[in-house]
Length: 456
Ligand SMILES: O=c1ccn([C@@H]2O[C@H](COP(=O)(O)OP(=O)(O)O[C@H]3O[C@H](CO)[C@@H](O)[C@H](O)[C@H]3O)[C@@H](O)[C@H]2O)c(=O)[nH]1
Image (cartoon, rainbow, N blue to C red):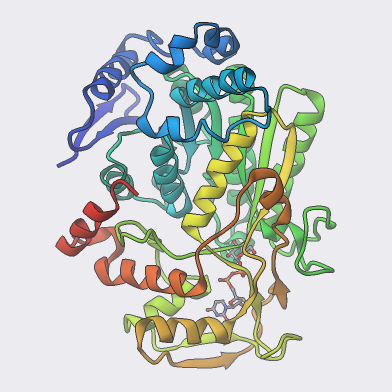
C-alpha cells in the first residue's frame, strides 16, 4: 500500500507529501531519503543553480553510466537523442541527456487529468518528477495510481501557483531543470462568469511561476496552451503560423495572454526555451483503466457528458446545433487521446534539451469528428444506445477546429497513435472500473489490469 508522509508547516497552508509506493529499487529509496532530508535541512541536495554545471559533468564519462540513479529506461532513450552523427559526440550528448533526466522536472497541475497521464509517461521514460498542485480540481488518488503503474515515486507538494511563497519553497527544495505547466482553471462557460478568477489563476499564476523560474535560473518550460488561441480558424486544419485570436471567452484569452508573455520573455532573454503546446480536444483514459478524467459537477465537454448519459446520471446528450457548415451539421473537433498528449510532452521536453528558444506546436490528430460521429463511436464502444436531442448552438462555439500537427511530427518526432475506437474504449473502461471516478474504491479488476501495464 502507498505510504504517505504529511508535513504541516507553521502556516498550516502547506502540506508536503512524499508519495511512495511498493517496493522499488534500493537506490531510489536512498535518493528519496536524501530528499526528505532537504525539507528539514534546507537545500542539502537541491542547489537551485545545479543545472548550470551540467555541461561540465559528462567530462567524466563514467558519471553517466555508473550513476546509481539512472532509471533503466533512460538508457533506451539514449539511442535517438541527438542529431549529431559523429559517434563520440553523439555519445557525449546522449550522456548529457541521461544526466538531465536525473534532475527533477516540476509538473504544476500534475494531479489533474492531462497532468497525471503526462506524469505517468514521464516516469516511464525515466524522468524524476515533482508535482505541485493545489488539488482544487484534481485528486491525489490519481498520483497514487500513477505510482503503482510506473513502479516509481512521485514527489508531491501541495501548493498554489498564485502564491510566490509556495513556488519559492518548492524551487528551494529541488534542483529542477525544466517545468511543465498545466495548473489552470479551464471551464469555458465559468470563465465568462468569474473572469477575474481566471485571469488571477491562469495569468498571474503563470507570471509568478516564470518570475520564480527566472529567480532560480530554471529557464526551460513546457506550457499547456490550447487550440482555443486560434479563435475561429480561417483555414482548417490550422497550423501554427495562423493568426491568433480573436478568442471568444476569458479562459481562451488567458491562454493567449500567457503565450504572449512567454514570447516577450524569450525575446528578452535567449537563455529561455519554451514549448507552447496547443492541445486540441483531449479525451480517453489510460489503457489500464486506473486513471482518467474525473469531472466535478455536470461536465461541459462532450465526451464526459456522454459518459454521464451512459451511466444514467443525465437523461440525454444535448447536441449544440446541427446547422453548422459541416457534413452532418454538427460541430467538428480534433479529438486526441490523453496518452498521446502525454507522449507529446515527453517529446517537448526532449526538444528543450536542444535549446530551441520559443516554439509552438499543435497537438492533435488532424482528423475531425462531428458530435454525431462521436455519439455513434461511443455507442459502438459500449454497445449501448445513447439518447440525444438537438438544441440551440452554444455561444462561442466554432463549426470546425482541427489540427495540422505536421510541425510536431517533424520537429518533435511525435505523432498520435491511438484511434477514435481506442479513445472511446479506454474512456469506457475507466468509467466501468471507476463509476465514481477517484471517489470510489479501486476495483480489484483495475488493480489486476494495473499489473499488466506496470512496465508498459
Ligand atoms: O454537451 C455538449 C458538449 C459539447 N457539444 C459540442 O461538442 C463539440 C466539442 O465541445 P467540447 O467538448 O465542449 O470542446 P470544445 O468546445 O471544442 O473546447 C475544448 O477544446 C478547446 C480546444 O479546442 C479547449 O480550449 C477547451 O478548453 C475545451 O473545452 C462542440 O462542437 C460542441 O458544440 C455538444 O454538442 N454537447
